[in-house]
Amino acid sequence: MSSTESKPQEAQEKHDAEATIKRNPHGDFSKVQASRPDWEEDRKWHYTKTRDPSWTYGSGASDKSGLSQSHVSIDPNAEGRAPVLNYKLLISGIIPRPIGFLSTRSKDGASTNLAPFSYTQVFNHDPPIFGVGFSGGFDNAKDTLKNLIDTGECVINIISEDYVEAANSCAIDLPYGESEWSVSGLTPAQSHVVGASRVKEAVFSVEGKLLNTQEFESRTSPGKKTGVLAVIEGVHFWVREDAINEDRSLIAPEVLRPIARLGGITYARVLDGFEIPRPVLKEEQKQGKIVDAMLKPKVEGQ
Image (cartoon, rainbow, N blue to C red; front, side, top):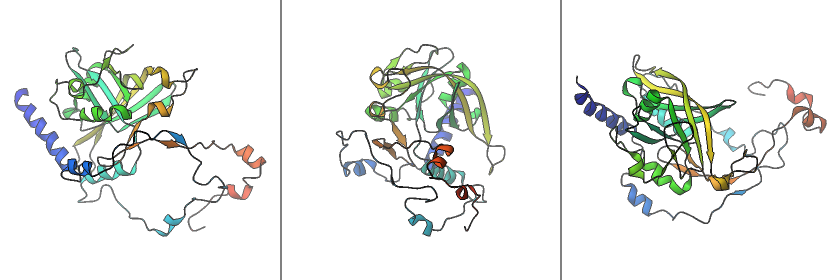
């Protein structure tokens, strides 16, 4: 099959996969959108107390009502269970998730790509290590993965409230070589180390270098490649001046105002938080908050 013949087939395969997922549960989303309250611009970041400030060691959950509910056992590889059901289950249960807004460019520099990925996380700080998950294998690599492998470079931008619609527009299924920068109207800014542009609207951006990749094979359809994990080292940071503290170690959440990914087509604003110190055993024992009996193993039914 020639390359010109394979392009329409690849596009159709991507379209079929997206149709199977059926992210939009509403049908005519514009009508649903119109029925909802307007965006509350005046809601600001603030701190609250924890759920139960008087909680003591050994007390368990602050709200124990869930203990009366039974659980459903699910085998992700059960015969007849479609993998798309695991996808939907995982993205609705592992929440909230950060969104890696990846900027890449082709090896010859003629083509650029900008796309959001909710399979994104930070794993280490020395060196800074990030992981990004891509659906599909190397034989059907998305534009971002293709560019990342070819150049070994990218920029991970964090999506904020003020450009969430523009960022989402970059998830559109443009043919390879056509620019999401133009579709979104976002502003490319020069990076310091890598060739790919960073998003100027982003409060926080990380220039990255590809360390390695791991391809995954389906459990239900042996031989089918279903995903790729890219491990990326952060080699340079960009933080908007009004968001960073004096020693450049802390980004203000009220300025970053990140958007979190939930399940389906649902996202969340990060508007409030609470602080809870990490406990130190010796100090807690000294204050009598933990007694030796609490340190014994707990088994089911006790």
